[in-house]
Image (cartoon, rainbow, N blue to C red; front, side):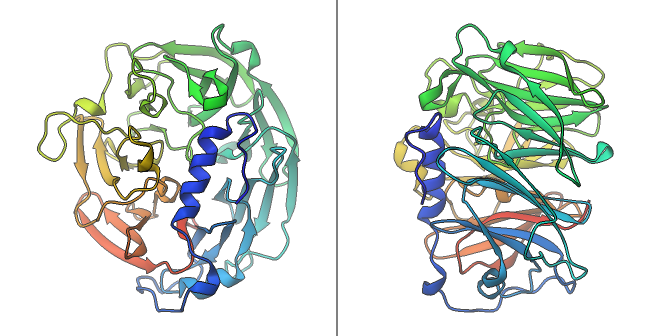
Length: 411
């Protein structure tokens, strides 16, 4: 596994990458077994599985034998993301210790399989780009320069640069650097969180939330807004852009994990920007530490950066905390449904505690159900959860690596 400990912000990412690899197994140690069949269509999903040294991604279906199909998957570094859009699978990865990144677009074959070579490719030098936001209506992708100074907008097909958006002028006086994180799109605007890093070496962001609002048509920053009800919102993210969402009413929600609880005076919680407005709603905040959970009126847990919005105010993610450093590796985290309307947190039944590194795997399927990876000391699987009926279904046995991305091949 590559180490980035000597590079900027590597303390946090080194822990993330090590944890992901800690529960993985090499292909040579695994045997083949049949997975749970649920769908008859071939190559209906994109998968990425994290192994000790890399991430393997490709397409298939839940009826496939995971340990067999992964043999034909494409290998990339275990520091990156994949996404699907308009018949193509995208891979964005940090490829070396100089923090150079590569974005590849693979135009899927007629059977949905990934071709050997990408149709387009672009390199980002020294900026640790590992998060992207696709804007379908504009055929555009925003690439976060995680260790750089802003965003790069590229054409979704050619991957040629459309615009470079420098956010360095919005760095606060107490910050050492500013980095874009979680983002959402609403009414032609990109709302992207800004990590104001007061301690860049240890990836500690500031004590208030900050969001830049960018006009997508012009790629110009309209303004930057801030709030002091929580610490920095969004963040470097789980590479799934999932510390923010837009609900059916047009309200935008951002989550603050309060620097993972490592700063005593930082406040966690959800904040919102109401529909039609471009300022934070200072009358509303939802602190998950104060929500009832497992029959208790308060909790020491908080949501890790990771999850997906399932509709009707419900967000599916993780619940746990990092107060104990060993929790990076222990099976102590739970999948939960967070209701930002009712301000409640409910554990998904039927699952054993797991490690906190499956957040990128949480995606919404075409039917509205939630897909995610899960592992404990005995089992490693992919599950489906229907939030309304509370039905949990095992979809695939994972024998090689751990499930890191699971998403439908549908726009």
